Image 1 (cartoon, rainbow, N blue to C red):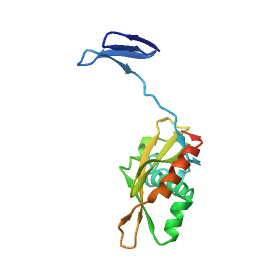
Image 2: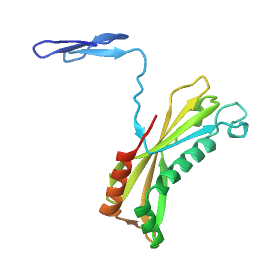
Image 3: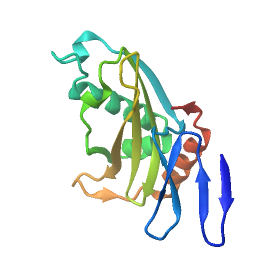
Image 4: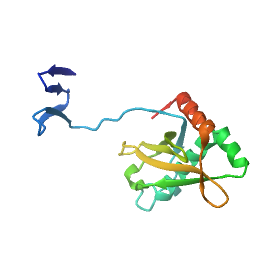
Length: 180
């Protein structure tokens, strides 16, 4: 990568990119291909795609994608003993997936790699991000899902997670060793 600096402008030249000028007059590199970054994940599972997980069109079923994501979130939660202690003490874990993508985005893979890690923490809930990376098909772009997890009391009211759970999640993320 080559970089040249002007008085108040930066011009970057990328091997496969072209240049455009923004409204402010600064050059912007535009990539012709998408870029995928590898990140660390706590949970990782390979799945062979079976014919019963495909629709009549040969594409992955939405229920299959959701099942893989739910299993990854459960595997993640199994790694959280302090959170499980709170559940054993009478609280309930609620899980809500946001914006479920169409499983058709995965194409017709022969296998998938499903990974999960906590990506956001708030006082009363946290988000487990799930990435499903297809393999052996015509599509290579991963599909991302997000599941909000919270503790609830018997009345269904959210309960603060506390510093012990927060610290446990941070330690788990520091130990994450799977790449996707």
